[in-house]
Image (tube, rainbow, N blue to C red; front, side, top):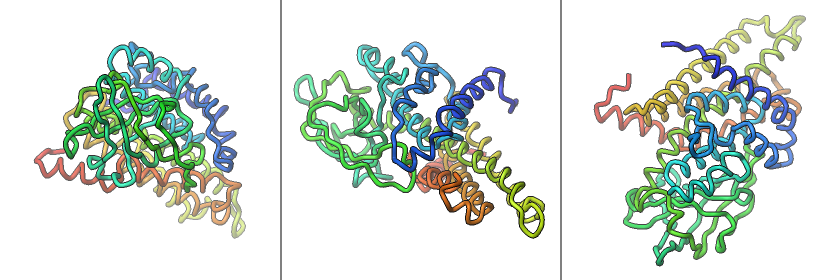
Length: 383
């Protein structure tokens, strides 16, 4: 059992740090303030392989492990949580196409997605199907060599600004077995997009509704077989949960670094506030929570890489623990900064706003507990 990073892993982290420090951190506050989607920067990250980190090499990606990818996402998130979070979603959608599309569709789409030339959105959630995703009602009716899709998707990251949608729709019976997965070019006739939602955080990426009105899609653009869609979506989300947890790690790490610098500079009662034991205890707790979160996320990634039977439960545990604790770390960082933490001159409030949604998306943390509890109650010894 070796917890140290290998030389290769450290090289990945160093490359991500250099990109983060040059391209993300200096511009993150501006993107947040202006709700600007930095497509050019995301595409530049693709030149370094960041848009296809765990997409197989044979399909045009980097072919990294989920653990190695997590390390990269954590480092990038220190500069801009919101933009990195979109990059992780794009990675998930690209991997799904690489893994489940037929060869001709894979060859058509994966190289341009893995390179960052084109961008992808993941479309599962609907206005009335959130945590109960298997109840989705968007329909896909077979018509000759095509499917005709009707319905709506909600809270879709990148929608209206990306080139392709990986979308789940109902082709059969009620429940998860009646759901299929489709690749749909965003400019397909019949697709329209709602307004860009005015969100608390994640302001450097658009979030819109996707409306499908008699959208005709070739049957060859179906990913997997009919009825495989829900299983494909869940396989994507196992990795997506590690990805979003990694973004929380980056936010918390940045909050801790910023707080450490601040408390050694800030003077009250004639000395640096770092000299007060109450502040020292808070810093110690923040660091301990961050390390615990890192180790849980990396264990979950290792489980997924090794196709462990309990991988989904560990991905749920890692996501739940890291997103909860890392939000708390960001919040404590604000407290250490006092009033300065509440104003936008300092980045603490942005870290907290961006990290908050991680407890909701890719499956709420309540659903993460359901996944773990079901595994335990089925007699699986997770500990």
